Length: 103
Image (tube, rainbow, N blue to C red; front, side, top):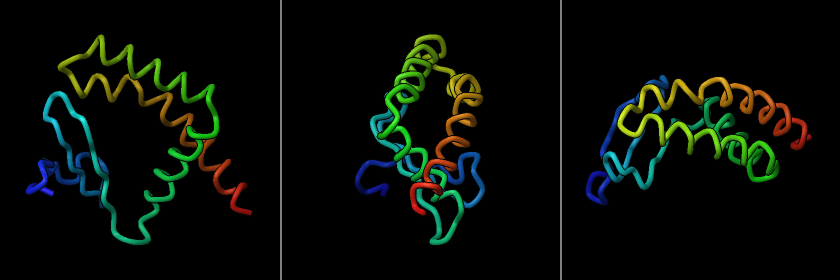
């Protein structure tokens, strides 16, 4: 990952994850890596797929992230804290939707 421009960030707040970031303060890409079977994988996939299918929540999430990025341009901790409540809300809906859609 380092050879292709990613910076390793360790677990970066989520136990069992390996997180890589590309682009320093102007991040362009990020990668989450988990061991096979880690329950966080389902959560991430559910979140991604849910947002692909639910444009209202996608817009709400995108608008919040944009506003937070403007307010906390160089303060990633405040940016993350600012979106925490909405992420938890979407995570819950996403997991319920994902699990019910897989039958």
